[in-house]
Structure formats: structure tokens, C-alpha cells
Length: 272
Image 1: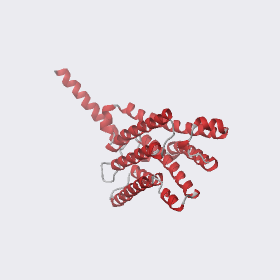
Image 2: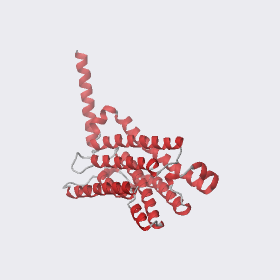
Image 3: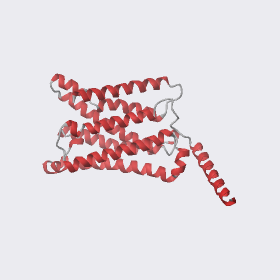
Image 4: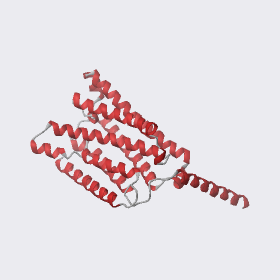
């Protein structure tokens, strides 16, 4: 486990340094998604738990363990916030996002998840992703209530993200997506959908086959999946590539041009 943690910490640290240098060397204005990626790479280093090696060296330390778990909770909260903000931001330009109506609802939902997770760990010593619901219900009603609140916040994030992505594709149509969405936005949607599906399949497997096993069997697959997902996102949002933002005026002109092309095609068919 020490070697695995060290490897992921090293690779995520290298990605963070390389991405930060690329951001600093970028002559144009930094995009909204690139700032989010910088934050996620910082939190990814915390998720990979560099403190684990220090805990092994000193023979265990509760403060370092608490910092590691809180870092993992912070990564989950940051990732959820990025999903909601970027998916909803695909519908509007950065200057058309009022703070109260755009950011505050998402911040409240994600803060609820982070707050409940941190309280559950700091007060009851339960790590959010290693909780058995049946045991929590039989042992302590307060813990069971926290588990229900945690589950509701996760379901809320999942449903909200599903609605945002489905609404974008439904409103524009599959063919118009090619005209209006940028490569970054299409990559974000595709990579995130695959990541969520694999993550859910992994947890369903753990539910049906039990949670007993070594760290390599239970935690390593999810850690590898998350690092791979962030590596693909980093490549998609790399500075200097195609712009990740489309102005509403450009979106309307693209829709109009698509409609003209479609109408011309119908006229050609009629002539034939």
C-alpha cells in the first residue's frame, strides 16, 4: 500500500506542477474550467493520501489520519461542485451566471454532503465510504440519520447532474451538439458519464459480494479509476487547446446555420 500511495501521489503531483506551469505560460485569459481543474488536481493529491507514508514512519498518528480523511471528503465535495457548475454552465456564458441563483443552491447541496461527512468522521469516527447501513441502523440511530442525510445529498447531486446533462442534449439535439458544444464540453460529458457508470458498478459489486477484503481489493480499484478520470480531464482541459467556452451569440448563429443547411438539404431532395 505504501508503494501504491507513493506512486499515485507522485503522478498526481507531477500533473499538478505541469498543469500549473502550462497555466502560467498561457498568454490568453484563463478559462473557468481550467481554474476548476487546478483545484481538483490539488485535491487529488490529498485524495491519494501522502500522509499515509508519514503515518507508517511514525507508527500511526491520529492527527495525520484525520487530515487524510478530511482531504478525501474535500476532494469529493470539490468534484461534485465542479460537475454541477460546469454542466449547468454549458447552457450560459460565464458573465450570465448570477451568484445567488447559480452558485448558492449547488453550494448548499455540496456543503451539506461535506458537513455531514466531516461530522460523522470527527464525532463518530466513521469514514463515509466505509459505512455499512445495516450495522449503522442497529448500533446508533443518530449515525443512521446521518447516513440517510448523506445518501440524500449524494442522490441529489446525481439527479441534478443527470437533469443538467439530459436537458442540454435534449434542447440542442444530437446533431446540433456537434455544432454548438466545444471539444472540452463533449469530452467532459463523455468522460464523466463513463466514470460515474464504472463507479456505480464497482459499488454495486461491493454491495452484492460483501465489503470484506484487503485494501488492494476494495479501495485500489476506485483510487485507480479516480486518478485515471482526472488524468483524462486534465488532458481535455489542457491550456492552449481549443477554447472551452462558447458565447450565446455564437450558439444562435450555429443553430441558424444548421437550420439553413437542413433546409437546403430538403430543397435538394425536392428537386430530385
